[in-house]
Image 1 (spheres, rainbow, N blue to C red):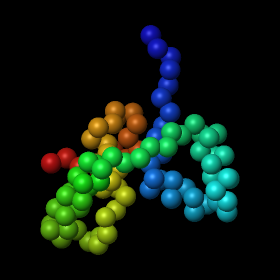
Image 2: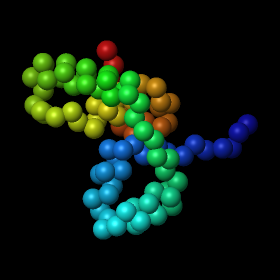
Image 3: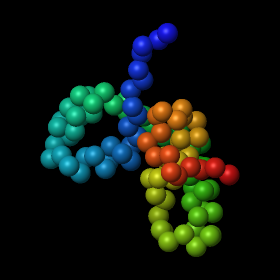
Image 4: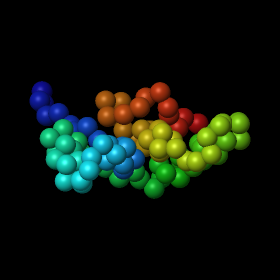
Length: 94
């Protein structure tokens, strides 16, 4: 039985959100390191899917007018294990 624990992911949008609370990038980087967060990029396929889901959202009279980070995260979630999903209430299910 493996005792290795995977590091929680930190996507670019979350990094931006976190950065608001810090005056200097070094402070944020120290917190990221201390929390053992793994910086991850969002794959292009997930970004493409997010745009398609967002388009469907807008066509169904969704109120937001920009591509929300939640759509990116939801699209990226499709390939991530459930234990690594930051927000499970929003998915890019077809």
